[in-house]
Image 1 (tube, helix red, strand yellow):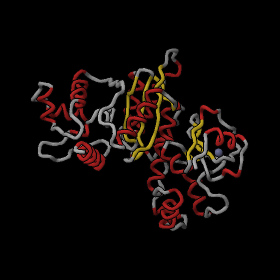
Image 2 (image 1 turned 120 degrees about the horizontal axis):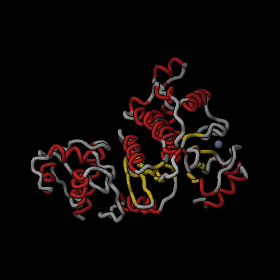
Image 3 (image 1 turned 180 degrees about the vertical axis):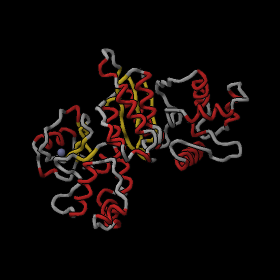
Image 4 (image 1 turned 60 degrees about the vertical axis):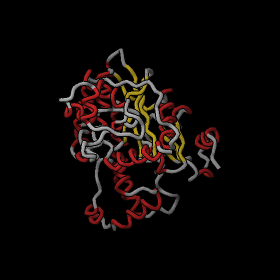
Length: 348
Ligand SMILES: [Zn+2]
């Protein structure tokens, strides 16, 4: 049985221990998630969202609270897991490798099993999400970022440290005129996605593990002279619904206002992508011909790769002339999945 929002919110206010384990509360303003009984200050209603599992909270961009330790099950979390959670809590950027665990006299396989069993996520995925979540919060919250944070950790997510260094210089917090970009994270069959919108429409939809995601966020921030904050937005609600319909196979065409700041050429290429019907694919050469620039095959490929609105602007429908998949920022396995899914679905 699903709990109602009101009931969970009241349980949260009352620190009702009978609800332990049945829900987790994500606090939008801090990017932290808590147990019902957390003793930290309780959030306003509009700043909470609830999850039934800690895995969902992590996948939606939240980090575990340092006060109530929501990943520790009451009473029976092994000491070695507590040590690891505490270490990662202190420094989400640190990657704990097998050698680090061995040094702590902790058996790496035991750790992997615990994460898989209790969080239904691999230890590697957990660390990766934690890193992304804390980075996303910093970049969207406009927090001052200390240089030492760049010392380690972000290497595997290329572009992060670069984007952050720029972020400190470009946060438009001292300006009177600031636009707001709302950011939302949600999960799909193919993993967590990140979406951005303003009151004008959709600006970004990407798989959250996309390498240049933070560069894209920075670009939007600068171009729109805006601040990125977690929050509700009518277009994000519509997007979430339409993407769910897409993944259930009932939606083939999207109906959302899209905004794609970029060069004229890029916009020409992106517009042509939308013309490729669901279930079909084209080559870069086809697309170059379609915009009457038969020689611009490479440039078309490049513009294709800089698309910020995945799935809806279907850059996944472009493959190499030989039929090879070529690149996809969301990962080739996702591209393959999307093409297979659409092909099967369009013949129904
Ligand atoms: Zn808490």
